[in-house]
Length: 81
Image (cartoon, rainbow, N blue to C red; front, top):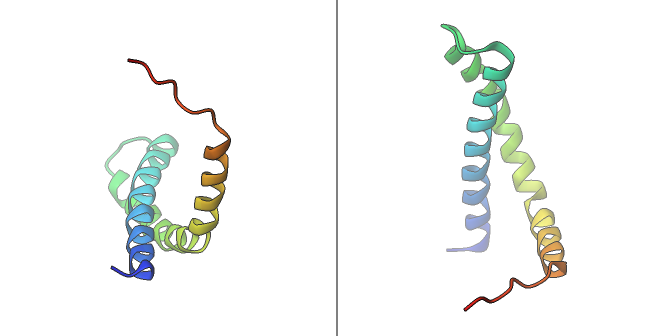
């Protein structure tokens, strides 16, 4: 699989799950769970997913490099045995 295809699929899946879970949670926090919950959640999700996809696609490589740099500064885990 090409690197570009993998990056696109990863951005689609990551943004899908993050948008789905975060909008469900925030709508519940703000409005509670009532008869209109699914309608409000759907509206929030459909607005959030394209933005999240674009953000993950654009900033994913930078965040990955930053994560690698930060992780390299962390102490190695202690081996127990």
